[in-house]
Length: 121
Image (cartoon, rainbow, N blue to C red; front, side, top):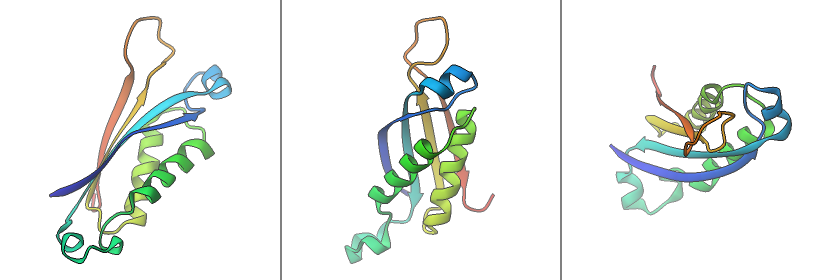
C-alpha cells in the first residue's frame, strides 16, 4: 500500500491531565502516515486523486488548537476520525503524538502515543 506522510507538525496547545497543562499549554509534535492507493494520482497528476496534505495539516492544527483534551489518545483519535471522514480514499491512518515536555520528574526526549485506524473497523 502506498502512503503519504506528514512528519513533525508542531502546535502549541493545551492538552493534558494536569490543570497546569491546560492553563499554560505546551508544544506537541504530530506525525501522520496515510495509507492509500496512489496509482491513479500517479497517472492523472491531479490533486483530486490523492490527499491534499496542506488540508490535512490544517485539520490537525485546527483540532489541536481549538480543543482541550486530557489524553493524547483522545486527541489522536479525533484527528484520525476527521481525516478518514474527509478523505474516503485513505484506507488506513497512523498517528503519533509526541509531548516533548511532559510533567515527569526525569530526563527524557518525549512521551508519545501511536494509534492506527482502518476505515472499516
